Amino acid sequence: MMNSLELMKRVRDALLSKKATDIVVFDVRETSPVTDYYVIASGATAAQLKAMSNSVNQMLKEAGQPNARSSGVPDDGWIVLDLFDVVIHIFQDEIRSYYSIEELWEECPRVQ
Image (tube, rainbow, N blue to C red; front, top):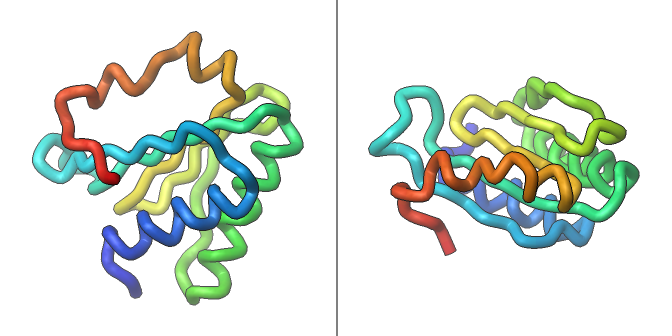
């Protein structure tokens, strides 16, 4: 099992491999008793959201990690993948703008 920092980095790479945009990572270890990192990424279409989700799951499989628990479907414009130590929100641009969930963690440090 990899640690949460390594897992977050691999998630970010998996999202980037499918051309995710505007990736933001929040370090919530001091704030959340539930997870260590929130990763938020955007895609232009439902097909791209699906590809990003599949890319994360493929990375997990190759790394011998448990599959992500997921909620949402690409056609709704928002998918959440829960890896316990890392939670990923994958949005279509307009849905992300509407919900502005970054505001929930704006006091938390961002990871570069």
